[in-house]
Image (cartoon, rainbow, N blue to C red; front, side, top):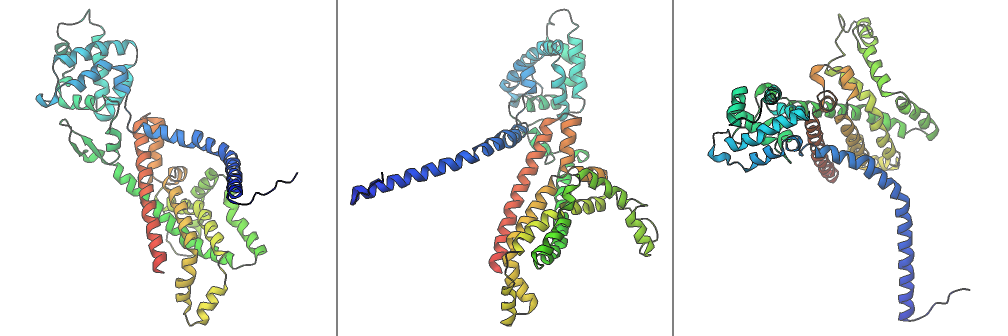
Length: 418
């Protein structure tokens, strides 16, 4: 039975409601189709990253093992002391040193304090072990603890305990910018021998930017050539561009170690052409890292460029030249603005991947060429310092977002000028 249309305002309202219901059903079906993907991203991408970043400012090791000590440290009036508390804080610390030693949880606190204060692990473990051997509680916990380890009477020790008393801390984030809090809770630079992280960040972004520019310089003419060929020939050559994706990254990186070594193919060719008198060091240094990373990331630059260049009609350039524009002016004023989205997409893609690279610098680079990702892996697996690893990751993410914002604004400004 075919529904009849009712004329007049009532019929118009009914039609609008029917269209609105149909539109809602359409949106619900579309949402249902993408819902599994959204759930997958939330569970296996957003949640792990959020959990990891949380460790950069959440610090509960000490307050979980020494809850009364953490509370006493927070309640103590440090402004009226010289950086060392009185008997009230030591009275909370002493029994918890003994109980945490017996519960085997004191090692976690000792490790956490050792991040901030060199020698804190030995200080805590020695004091806990000797206190556990005492017969009964001493008359003064402060005197007993200071007699065992005089280090408990130093302001630096208590500054470390105050910084670790949780539940939140800025210790790890400050470390990533080579800063720390002193005994008076002021933010000061760390000692020169510990000021390494700003240098690591700078090295990471310099390498990533260099690789991005090299990929753009090499990938642009390749994409330009492919975009001007007939589709059947371009597809054949595109297979060569995609060929590296079919080889494992570890194999490609190891191959560069063989090719770039002192007796490798590159050095043999350079000496055969009399361009060098002897082997040139091209591996386990910055040059090897940049060469290998450029080779690995080059397809990520070519593909976006080719996709955009393929859509630019060649008639535009011929029209510009027929109107009197020189070749370079026509290229700069007509062609470049149309392919700027491809340049921006390829550059951002290569840069962001390069910033987080780990395997290639670890295998091809030397000790002075390791990037932030190497130290994140080191603190995660070797020293189990999850807080510092998370803080380095948070700093890398924040710096990447800032640079991405600046880059997109610059690209938009350049397109407006052109």
